[in-house]
Image (cartoon, rainbow, N blue to C red; front, side, top):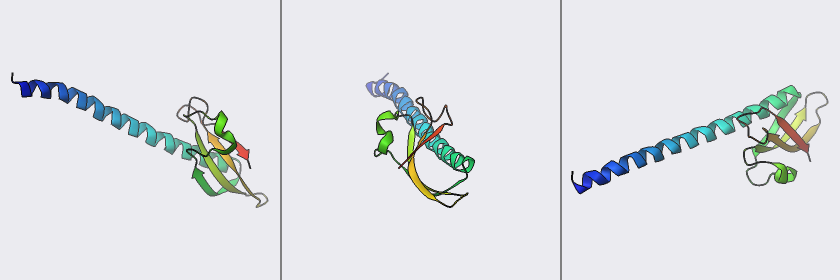
Length: 111
């Protein structure tokens, strides 16, 4: 075997593991944010709210900053109540401490 074939034989499995790992990370990230959005919409419909505005908060998580795990998702939401048409705003945390993939919990902190 030539020296070039030996290098390629070591390079191919490493590259394959790298590409597969990258694909898994992208898939899990996509599913994570899709599930977070579903939790947000389910929370709004369960509580008879209409979402006026929602912003994903990656860094500025407001009053939930110190109590939110990295596996949870926080949205800043502005909603209108269907009952009395009041407009409220707050920070909605999706998931539990293990993340949104294992829980459909939603917790709001009104501002």
